[in-house]
Length: 419
Image (cartoon, rainbow, N blue to C red; front, side, top):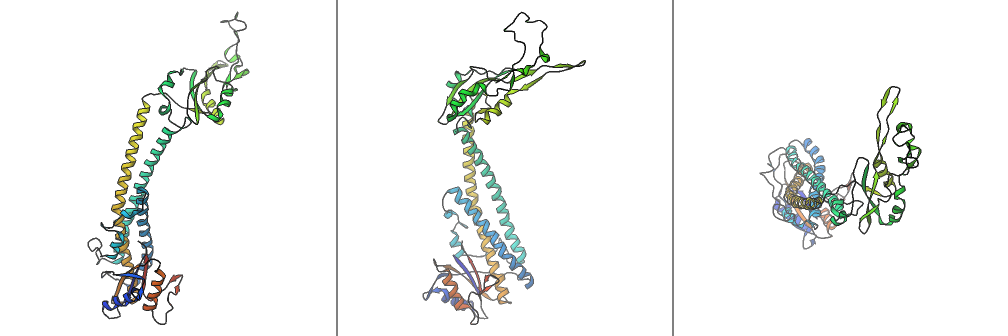
């Protein structure tokens, strides 16, 4: 943890202020922290009214920029799977950068109005945040596509791409029909439901198909003669399942499920009829769609499948390509995090310096005459350091650490943060 503290020079030399702050919390008598000089450049003050408004906004800006720094850090850790110690600021670890902080006059000219300077810094970080959102979303989408491809390849017959899991040997023994009225369909069944499926399959959809009409088998003498047919016959006087009896065949099984084929009547022609002198054309009824729905309700999954022996190798290549793309995007995003973590961190520290400057001017007045230092707090000594500073730097009539509108109040400017 770090604390940035500034006190008024009160017309004295900055060295006196340094010594005062050193003896307050970073000396053998008060060994609560290690102290470093903290450079605050000569910035443009403007009017005090503007400075007060800016000071209120700076706290929010500080929090927003910090959240973006944390977001980049979190993304880098998730990508690498380890603590983001590899992230650096300008090639050095973040703690060393903080302790050796120097204002970047080329990137952030100190003679620009403070409001413009803050807008410049926060605008740059917002652009980084937007880019991170887009890159993270693209990476997440690609990962999702890879997971879906792996799920299909490694799943059971209920979810897998059947061309990836059915062997060529198994398909050699399967006869597939797809004519105007007949179709062989593939049905995946959980192993626990095998017995129920085999016992009921030929009766599933028992009201879907109309089998009524002239029965030529009992009396063939009128075969071909003008008897009742077409719309004159009640086709649906007798109903049944579309499954062709005896067509059930087991194709292949895995540890969770079994794949069967069965041939069904996929559609049925409803005869046309005359309305007065006008003929109403017949229609074809889609039976396959309704049969699929009834199967699904019973946990028998009809798979939309056309066997293609070459697709397995294409799917394997597509999966491999997806893996290559995900790995490439992970490497690219990791590299991006390493680059932009430093940029965002530099921006964050510059915002903190502007906060120290603005609050010091508002606290100690003009002309600008204050000294700032950075304390690297010893583990567990944060409260002790703050109390020591209050005691050494506070006025005699002030109660140390008083709360002002819910916030700690001190007789000096104090900013606490963790890198």
